[in-house]
Length: 122
Image (cartoon, rainbow, N blue to C red; front, side, top):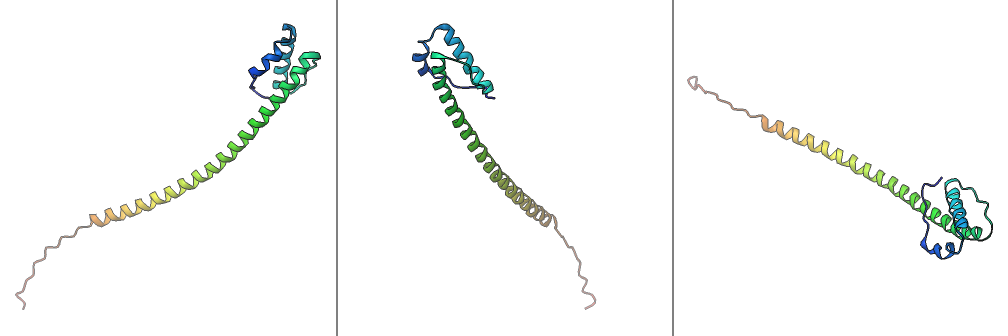
């Protein structure tokens, strides 16, 4: 079931030739078709108008499906690359933290020795 569709203004030149009742039948048929994929029971001019509108609806739908499929593939690829980048960054952060911890430990060790030498035994 589709939630939306495009109706082109180019159709108006054909639709305005229909009576108001035929226009209503055509519009109802379009909405029924888009929402349920059921083919309408139209005859005459409304059936002819529906045939070219249906063809364009199908082209638009196929184009949209192609776009969404390509976006899904691109998103999956981007997600993998993004995950790899985050993993590498995490490893780098952990390595940097370890280095900083060792550096701080080295700086914290300060030894002061005050030793008095008694040389009376010499």
